[in-house]
Amino acid sequence: MNLISSLAELIYGDADSAEIVERITQLIAKYASLANSRDKKPLFDHSDAILITYGDMIQTEGEPPLQTLRKFLVKHVAGIVKGVHILPFYPYSSDDGFSVIDYLQVDPALGEWEDVEAFSDDFRLMFDAVINHISQHSDWFQAFKRCEQPYRDYFKVVDPSADLSAVFRPRALPLLTPVETVDGTKYVWTTFSDDQIDLNYESADLLLEILRVLLEYVKHGAELIRLDAIAFMWKHAGTRCIHLPQTHALIQLMRAVLNQAAPQVVLVTETNVPHHENISYFGDGTNEAQMVYNFSLPPLLLHTFHTGDATILSKWANTLDTPSDQTTFFNFCASHDGIGVTPARGLLSDAEIEAMAQRVEALGGFVSYKTNSDGSQSAYELNINYLDALGTPGADEDDELRARRFLCSQAIMLALRGVPGIYFHSLFGSRSWHEGVQQTGRNRTINREKLQYDRLEQELTNGLRKQVFAGLSEMLQVRSAEPAFHPNASQHVQTGGMFLTIEREYQGDKITCIFNVTNKGWHLGWMPPSEHITLFSLTGNTVIDWLQPYDAIWFKHARRDDASP
Image 1 (cartoon, rainbow, N blue to C red):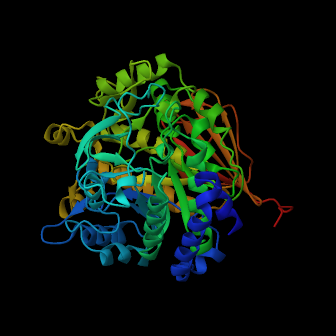
Image 2: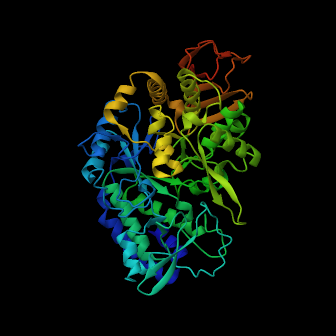
């Protein structure tokens, strides 16, 4: 408990820390039964891949969506992906689940806790902890408006005349929202929207309640917990109010509590920020997140295929080191949100980001903007299905080309160091859903279509969906069998501009992956060792010195006799 005590002192000061530590100790004791045999096993390995999905992504009339989703996934992806990240399945008031009304309930429209827990029979489960903010319709916030204890301290109240010009803004919306309470009008901190009221971690009572929420998630089957928008947890006027030392200390405290109560659990931080800021959430490699979302990958990969040049991606990929073998990246290309471009700033020029945004708009997508500290606006997110985002504006492209180019992009993601996360619509070859944007008026809806079970099964028998699902399934199965794809395996990336080579090696197993990121064939002028096994090729190509357009080839080297155990 010495670590927990020192962190409590750092966050709350000497005067209050002893009582806080005592309460945390009691909480850990209450949930002591959560630790299971997984604490004796690696937290992740080469067999890990996680599917990202909403609880109602697949629907059948008359059946709770969580039951429908599980039935579909058990039938189609068990053995292909090892884990399932069910996006917020709690009661909510907006933002498709990210304005949570009650952290400890399952939305009745989706099912019950038993339906969530049933997934753990076949998959590792990832839950969302949306703990930077909560819905204005929550019981907590309603009690705040009545000025009841302890809830009156659960939210950050700010004088509207305070100088908040330095605060980093991820949205083009007001930072403060006026709220009528029994004590008059109060201005509460709202980083994302007026329906998402930021929590105030200066309250130790709030911290204890959030720690209880995390442990309840483990009790219900969570082996991975995604900390949503975690960078904004602590606010202090006169600072940027992002990545503050207290924020890191809070994550370290959460990690320390879980290490004692449930050491099998992996914390995954979601911080949509530039790369050097993002990786700070690894801490020293032992004390913060075991995984961080690799937010720079989606825009850099998109830029690579737009330009047909892998140089920038290659240079960045060679920096993907982690501070210990207890940490790794959570790699992804697409998610329920759009393609964030802020993580590419400093890696791509403003002109390159603007060109990428214009191309996405030409492909039928949208660009969302944020307000900067100087009052100007800049793009922060591209809203489009990732498969469509890779396209060529105005070109008459067939499904075979679309599928091969998309699968090449996914093969790069799967080859890089880390644990891959595959969004549902990526695995099943979906397209942009423009009708949804028209229905909701929200750009992000373009990649959030809900599908009917029978129709999707039928569409998987032919066409684009079949090509994408079959290709990704094969790659995932190959990957899960090869130790060289271990998240901590060494990685060396090279490029000739138009092609990319990724070498992975782990305890004597070595794999080389070669990718053509253009629509032209290329001679590499290079041949692999005479003794190798081709594990995968998108085009069926076995002549590795010749790369067909958008080809991806993985081959395995003969194992060295002198490999270390």
